[in-house]
Each structure stands twice: as structure tokens, then as C-alpha cells.
View 1 (cartoon, rainbow, N blue to C red):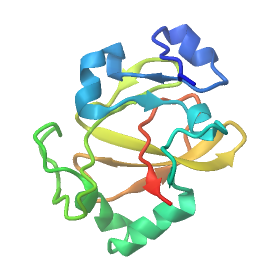
View 2 (cartoon, helix red, strand yellow):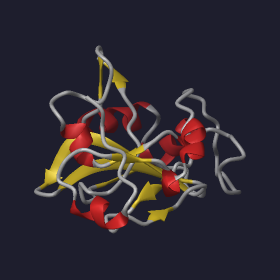
View 3 (cartoon, rainbow, N blue to C red):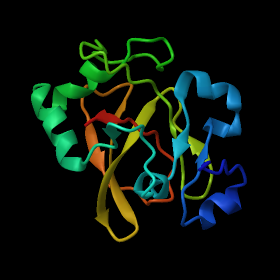
View 4 (cartoon, one colour):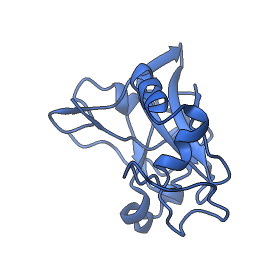
Length: 162
């Protein structure tokens, strides 16, 4: 089934079901950055990932950070060294071929933020009622950070092979 593309800020804010958007509601950004999804899309029983893939859990992200020498170094290892990142793109080596791009996010109020500076991905793990774990990195960081934003926030999704 199709996931609804929600462009109106007040509609985005009121959602309690899955939805996506393009950064700043500009479809031309899709080719570079993909779409931004609320967490309800991640939690939908139909699954956002293709068969044989899944949205990683928070413990799987912990494993990722640990296997890359610790969270303090992992951000540089997953960031693309693309000029799409605002300079400086600190320690971006993309040595993992993860190729993280600065896709930004959509705030709970529907406003767009952080393109060229940040990238965020949902996990499938709820952190508390109304919130779920995500991980992120920033142009000036060498690290991966973990946080628990409101489920109505629009973030990227990265699927992991089962």
C-alpha cells in the first residue's frame, strides 16, 4: 500500500499514522537524499523495508558504533565525503561504504531543518511512549549520536539486511 506524502505542516503535526515527505516538500531532493518518514511508518506492520531487510533496532546501532571503534569515531566512518555536506565535513572517510548524506529532518511542527549539516535515521525501537530511538551525525562531528525524538519527526530510514 502507498505511504501518504504529507506536505501541509498542520496535517504532518496531527499524524498518528505513517507518512513521508521530501525535504522542504521539494521532490527534486529525493534523488540525492531520499525521503523523510515519521516513525509510524517504521512501526507499520506492512514494513517499510523490502523482504529480507528491516529497520535496525537500537541494539543493532550500538553494535554498529562499537564495531567501528566506538561511537566517538563512527560518524566519520559512515559519512560520505561528498560536497553535499557543509564544510568542514570532519573526518569523513566513508570507510564503511555507508555513504551517509546530510538529508536533514522535518520537525514535529512540520518545518524542515538541518539539510547539509545533519543526517538522522530511525531505529525500530521505541524509547518511551510517543518517542523512538534514532541515530545521527553532523558535518562537524566524528561521532554517531543516539537520541529519542518524537515519533512525528520526519527522519531518514536505512534498512539493514536480515
